[in-house]
Image (cartoon, rainbow, N blue to C red; front, side, top):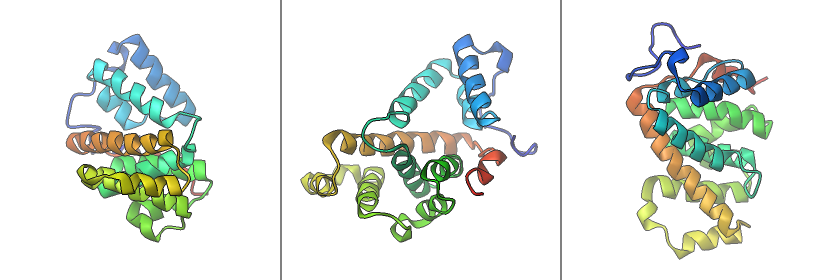
Length: 192
């Protein structure tokens, strides 16, 4: 549920009943699991082909059980979304991070300044790289990958760190351009 005075997006929100079956079913599945429909699903539904592509890549990156933990994946999202000043993704993925890390403090720490957060050396190496992908990907070199290997990351995990940071760079920009607000429900998830 969003603030009734604030629209879900600057762009059209389609009538739910008129959505293609696969998109309607995807949204219903998320609503059943979370108890509400995240605004980003409704906002992206007005472009069905893009909705499908966006969530297919999102799910491939974020739902993998190989390599990075799901909490590490969310940590990358929260850190990069904080850098990109994306309120929606910080709030929504911050809630998921709190739940997956079983830590009610971590999301706020990572979003505001991950360098001062209570993190392991491995997590710091991961977020250093994610930040560089976010701000200065053109400067990434052998030293960056060597630092990650020394922190214990495999080549596939290094790819995932970069891919998640890059994907959410795009997501952050879409959400900011659409002025999509976070659902109120996200704010308290994983805090108690």
